[in-house]
Length: 154
Image 1 (tube, rainbow, N blue to C red):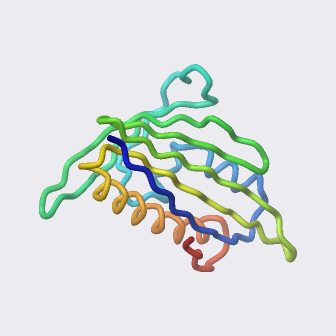
Image 2 (cartoon, rainbow, N blue to C red):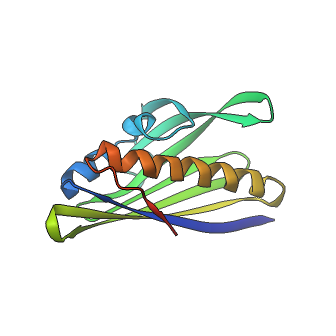
């Protein structure tokens, strides 16, 4: 049985939508932001994907650390929206839906919604890891795109 939940955050950055799109839609650059990623390798695009990647994270369970490799696809990458889906065995999926909206004063609003589904026995661990990593990524994202503002979690 799969369990599913969603979390989100918002970041404001002093950059263009094109700058944010370039950073967020190129998963080879996610190592700059995502605290668990240790390696990203580009793959031939899967059917329906604009780009595909093999990503290796370094996860921890107590004092033990172990690598986990999964596949991620960029499905949508436009001036106002990015959709990626990451799949890991067994039956774990992370869907990232990012919306980019210009705001007054030269700011860009970046709204991110993460939906994770995983088998019930793994869900709590996977959700905690994903939420912690993506909120750390949000903090780094503002700085990487030119604004030091802290993200707002949703």
